[in-house]
Image 1 (cartoon, rainbow, N blue to C red):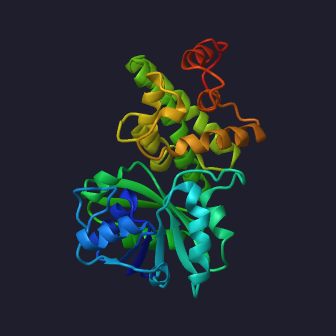
Image 2: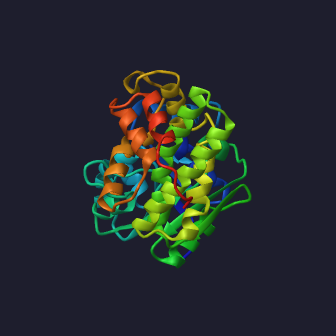
Image 3: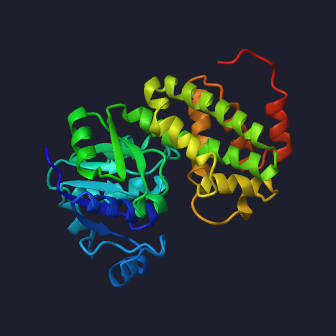
Length: 327
């Protein structure tokens, strides 16, 4: 199927970037934002409050009501992970026929321990779940800088058609049917990026950062295996690729949150944007325990976030683990 008409739900930095991406690919785009102040800014100044300096293409329509967006061929749901269910519950009854809803959030729902496509699938019979994830910063994508991501759906042809529809010279989506693997990579890397930020904030050096990222990837791979992810997905853009990006750049909110922790701030004192890993860490750890997956780095992050352990104690706990063969 050819997809020519897209809706983007959420006018934050990432939603704005994806709306611009679809427009560059030659698609009709309708953007809806729930926050009234940001919606007004998008309409009047053609700019998101969360991505200043980046102008929306004139072809992008700003919808006054979510119902105006619900009738499009495909929908990009671009809200924080813990808000996905609420947004989908509003959207789903408005879908008159089955339509792909592409979740663009990276996380696991608290309480239910469900992945994002599971959450939206529960919200209505006309929701056809898909997921978009990978190494991408909104500012880069919005400016058209080269980016590659993964778009996954259970139906391989649907995934390929959607990837073809939103792809362009500067934005390259690879398609996959490994929905679970793509979701796991996006969720777990946020927790590990906090740990990488702690290493940077503590000034532990480049060698420690490399070790942390490598052993973090081992944790991600073990978790993925336990929950049915394919090895090639873990090695791909939405797994290793996203991990490398978010564990190495202050553009990552999770990395920056970890830097602040490493410099001695308490979790409750840190401000400066949404860090999904803060919400995901305890859920990820619970799910790891459910399947008997050893995740010492993620465990240390969860203990730090709940203030059950200091940064110094967390580092010591990792450095004094028994010597073992690498796996």
